[in-house]
Length: 498
Image 1: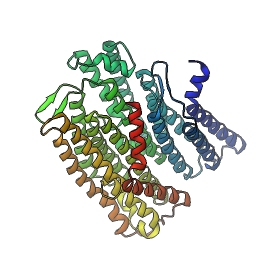
Image 2 (image 1 turned 60 degrees about the horizontal axis):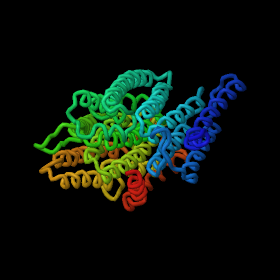
Image 3 (image 1 turned 90 degrees about the vertical axis):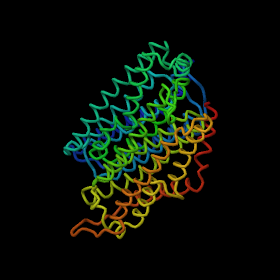
Image 4 (image 1 turned 120 degrees about the horizontal axis):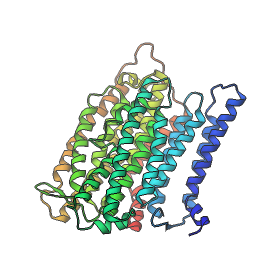
């Protein structure tokens, strides 16, 4: 390995770093020449988007593959695909940020989005615990600052403090759990850890290390009981930051959680089959899945803030995804990754529409969406598509995603011969999906049936937002009718990696 090869592996991340520094420089130059006047987002947004597109082009058109420094840096079809997914979601967050009114320190806001993306790409592109931790912390620190960026908003400051405190505790759990696993396996590479742990599920040091590591990852994907930060952060954070946390961060979190469990903890899975529980990580994941589905969906019923509703909905969706991770097969990994991408794209679209409503009507309560269909019919139709997809109704992508999640879980269960196995979790997931339809319909009822409040500002989205949301809605429909557009590349990439 030489420095040129090392730099080539990290070239997309280097491009993003240079773009972030350029955004800060442009912001400082504007402030110096304009007596600290608010800076328009157009130029900095264009530079940021250009950097993201260049990084994506490098991943697409320079298909180098390899494994450097003992799995510290891994570049294969699977990591390349999900680095591209993270870049797409960051680009959409940049578009949302571009639509914000001019303000001070806007360059730093764009730069922090790019720093967070670099961290997420490092997380996706490693199979080594220390680099994984560093990537998570780079993304986490960027998100902490982004959440509290609206200094005049007390909810933003409160959300940032809660996010920072919970994030710090989860990082401590994760790092301590990793240290115990290292003490047992004498390695921080996932493949070597999997070899060392195989056949030793009941070792006390391993049990404690596994539980603490899962607690750290549970925070990253907002699974119960590590979810307490999510509703406040989704509601208090500036909408572009909340959109990236709910999409790109979730996708990278589930990607690396599945990778750590299937590679690093292979052989100590255990069983969560009804009446056939065995020690391992599967029962812990099963408990987190059940609690996440129940609490997330039931708590969403009581929300009047659409952002908090989406936060609790995300907790419920985390439970759905965890069911497939329990199957611990390559096919289940494909289902997890497919659904994570679908969830990320639809949630991004929903946050984009929420951002428009907040900007025009000043809030995100259900009543703020009343009468929206008469003022912004295209945006209302897009919201319909996003929420119905999240609910899992055909012919949208969410339906196929849930169907694929549950069938792979049941298929792995049948192969193992466990009866009734994970049927109890799938049945609970179906019940909670029905519950979720109710609170999504509450939002749609306000949009299509509610009467516009007197004196309310008309919702007039820009052409950029209309085009972005329409594209995401079309993607949700296309992937529901032709899931192989995304599923085929994921299956190929998973097959190459495994």
